[in-house]
Picture (cartoon, rainbow, N blue to C red):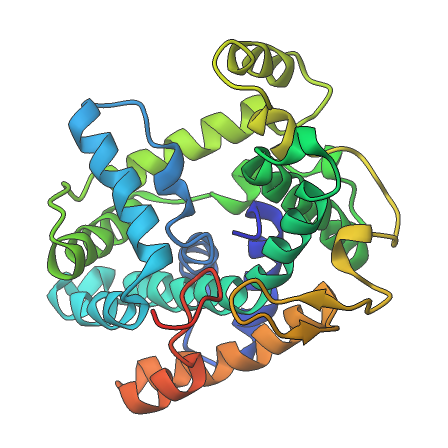
Length: 308
């Protein structure tokens, strides 16, 4: 990722990059903002037939790792198969997917660099990179919400970012099902992505507040099978301040985990870079200009790793 709040706010900023008339009305805006969550809801899909939910989780993993251009252009093509009345909602969702990719591919390297640096500091954190990843993203979420909206995480509900209508469920499910089958060879019903969004919201509601009983309970269950709690790492802590160590606001040097290059950008710098990239990527997708899309994306995976 970044996590849910950062993607939601990025979506609100990214939609302003689109020409007038591309995303209109509340339903299309909600579809766009859901698209900005990308494949992330797939990772928490557990309520359903085990083989199908596992396939949905696998889709989320593969979309982050490989064939990102194929997936997004297949999503674009899927729009031509939607009923006329769903076409605009579907287009808004696909344009939101591009936003998720733009932010992920641009900002993920600084998150991975941070988790590796923290894991190297203490022996008991060497096996906790996944949890450190979640902790960094949670801290950035909290900071972005306060920095850009002057809002504390205690006043933000996951349902704000995951609001949807029947038409949004119908179109997003059909599009993600087409991507799964045509790009990755995974057969999932069109009902599965909406179900994954439902599970994502349930999970986030349970763990979102660090001090909540739900977060503590799930963390206790985790402790029976793993040494570190991902739930506690991802849960948001109230921190209404403009300071954020994870965002590297002082522009200290860090090592890109994929290239080994020394870099100095803050998360704020990368956020702005992703916004600029989004405008180019979205226009290229709308125009079906894959050459421009691939030039701008530079073949980066959602993790920011070259060669996707």
